[in-house]
Image (cartoon, rainbow, N blue to C red; front, side, top):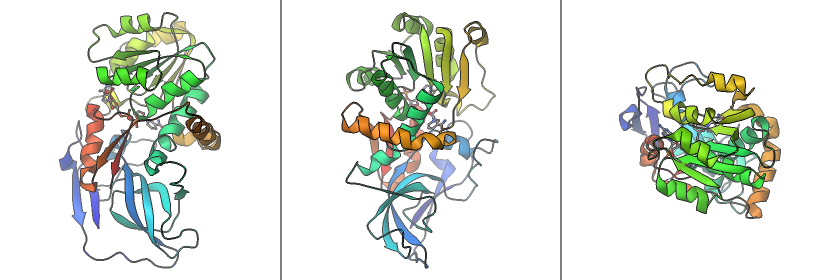
Length: 331
Ligand code: NDP
């Protein structure tokens, strides 16, 4: 069994030296009520960066010298628990470990005949729920409105934009490469895409792409990109603060332009969003997302990295935009 532990807390951008691989030769055994799990797919997510630092947040930080954990799809390889049989696949928050023992608490069975296993970490998992709940609950979209999405070619962003199109919005996506911008339009049906790395005046580019102004901003990145969007908002705009990846590695308190006057004069609503606060809406979200998937109204991209040993690097690569859609590691 191999385990990845957090060896030291990243300062600035994470590196592989923050992690350590620990190998254990002895066979894992299970007691009554337990199951033995073999990891199949491991999700790497930007929010894990927050858990690697010891700053106060909505979830406690990872402890040093203990396994890192995230969303994992695992196969039940032995069971002494009536709720799980050998051969079942489960989804849950599990350790970065090739094999582990669980009492089954917090695990959900997933059906590999309904969707590819990795989809339960993305479109049918936290990613899809985040996109759906954030956009509908805080964004309150109305047909004909204009939606801007940052981090648009990523896991959450690419789903947000598509849901926006399904709900009849004009959708503009912001991403970091021309290839991603092309993907936004050709695969995900966005109306416009902007490459923030090659666009000199983001404020003007957004104004051009959104001639009627911005009614909803789904923010995954924060920083100067968001400032450029916020100066283009309309009256009663809704701003969903889902993430701020551009400042996750900052070693100083992040600074922002003074965009508050734009919120004031437009009576705009800006609200932080944490998906776990919307659990009551998950059944509705899963029903809508799987319905749209089966009707081919919704699609998704995945960047699948192979091999347990590559989990730390796959995580780090999120901060260099190496992924299109959901980044997952296949074990
Ligand atoms: P993504 O698939 O979007 O991966 C991260 C992407 O962020 C990269 O591909 C990269 O794309 C972009 N990025 C990296 N660095 C920067 C930067 N400095 N400036 C601008 N963009 C950058 O990840 P997720 O979809 O999983 O997550 C997206 C956001 O949503 C994150 O901020 C995450 O923390 C948040 N989130 C929040 C949840 C909640 O409950 N609040 C739940 C899930 C996610 P590019 O090439 O375009 O730069």
